[in-house]
Length: 396
Image (tube, rainbow, N blue to C red):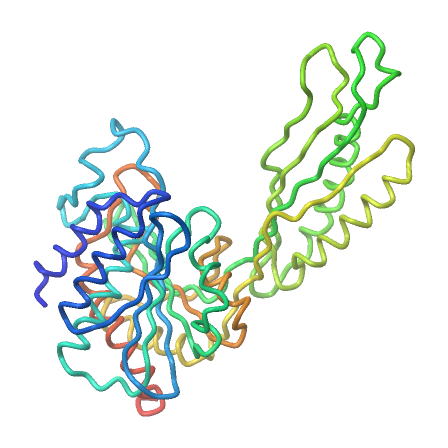
């Protein structure tokens, strides 16, 4: 496949709007082009108009997983864009459009790599399984729906083609990273229940907002202490109070208030530890008259950490400079990917995040460097074949 053909597949993918819906249309497009190259794939719907796509190739006991998501964030105001966000636009060596960086560029590159491996008759020495998901941007809905389908538990390693490059505005170049660790996530809400009364007689009511404020003071003291604990790989936890709501009208004592908090967790300070500690705080506070607090967990994902000595990390480090003309820098990130969902079913697999996208993700005028997209296709083909054929042992 030549570069014009490669870019035309990305162009079509960008034209299909998938901002929180409609992944099925994109999945069907991918299914068609794979079928044209004698590669079978399976759609697994998870909501109306929304699907995951699964592709399997090769034979053998070793199975390498590849994953990327089909959905994007919203386009935002069109006036902020230099070009139509649903039309792939080539300017100054960059390909602009919603999803070019996060992460249709990475996903399309994976699909093209599979097609070219098939067309070139390359001996894999094992199996590849591509998990193209939907609903990643809001709750990782697609990846969660794949649990229980016997698609994750037998993977030996997983490559996540999410963006892993940082731009340098001065040089016009960007730095490639391989991400071997991701913080976990704990989303929770604290509900404070009180008793309504007229604001002229507050002694007849129980102020849910005041009670929530007392709790928030205790939570702040707790997190001020916990952020001092430094995980050797993932660093410190990152707690953020995101939403506060409560009260019905200005002349009433509020009977209800709610705090929503997100914490980026680590292996040392994980979600279970935080939940247990906060429940202890709430239990003690609820022993006080008129205090009625409860904690509800909204979302919980474990941290993802892979050894730098794993085969997949070593291969990425070994071959990165050959294709990208730069050393691959290993690092961790606070954000999460579908990998955090997948490890709940297989915490033995090694995981690396490396993709052609960059830090323009989610912004207006999102783009991917054309050469990064092309180079990544060749790079990922090399990694797939080398990993499944144990070439690391031969080369080192």
